[in-house]
Amino acid sequence: MARSGSTDDGDLPDQHGRTVVVTGASSGIGRSAARALAGAGARVVLAVRSAERGRAAAATMPGQTEVRVVDLADLASVRAFAAAWDGPLDVLVNNAGVMMVPQGRTADGFETQIGTNHLGAFALTLLLLPHVRDRVVAVSSSAHRFGRVDLADLGWERRRYQRVAAYGQSKLANLLFTLELQRRLTAAGSSVRALAAHPGWAATGLQTRTENRAAVLAGRAANAVFAQSADDGALPTLAAVTRDLPGGSYLGPSGRGELRGLPTLVGRSVDASDTSLARRLWTLSEELTGTSWPL
Image 1 (spheres, helix red, strand yellow):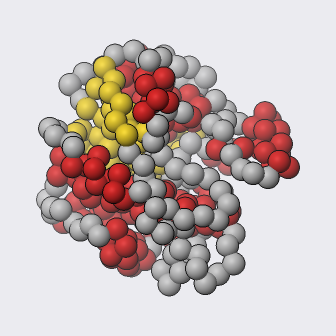
Image 2 (spheres, one colour):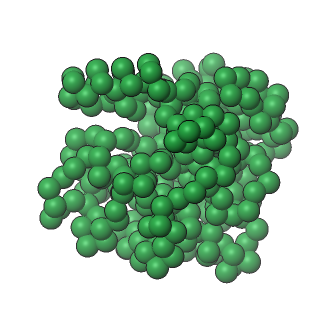
């Protein structure tokens, strides 16, 4: 595993012969993870919204890369991506997401953050799962700790919208999805594992993508003081992809407050361990996305 502050891909286990899909791989943590995995020998598919940005990112990477378009905020795009997939897939990394954006709706009418960060990734996973041979990795956040999943109002139609709370809900949903996914994989006798990771505080640009200038300036200042690099922020994801860990494992930085440091197993909130809530969220997510358990 790469050392903190290092992008030495040689520290990763040999990934030759493995195919990995990384969503949101044109920038930030996804780009760093994709580059490291390609450098270690994996065939890496950059699953991105913009083919142009994806090709620009791929051009900076060693090894075998491919760019395919998918927009997690549009289920038609998700279905098209999955339908076009042929052959085995060793690892799916659900990395793409949005953070604390203004209230909006996806192409299917979902609140933007739950629609992109959870429902799009949920649908993509179920549609690709018959191809997956090794593991599914969800990129969550320590922000899941202030999230609350409201199954009666997942899309913020009855409550006053709060972008921070909506982000926390979506990141909590990532962990609940991983929890129930692993339960189902185990029950089906599958050797595929579901794991999750969070990057700590990494300077990826997510903190400054807002129309509020004061928030942009605050995000930049906080990044300058607290943030680690995107390469270091990708280390927990890379550990989840490559380490021999049991299904259900959750990794994050080892430093104080899990803000930075080498990847290690970390804890989660009580809500993120609620198996009943995970099952109910799964059922609702199947209904909303029109997908179903494929194994």
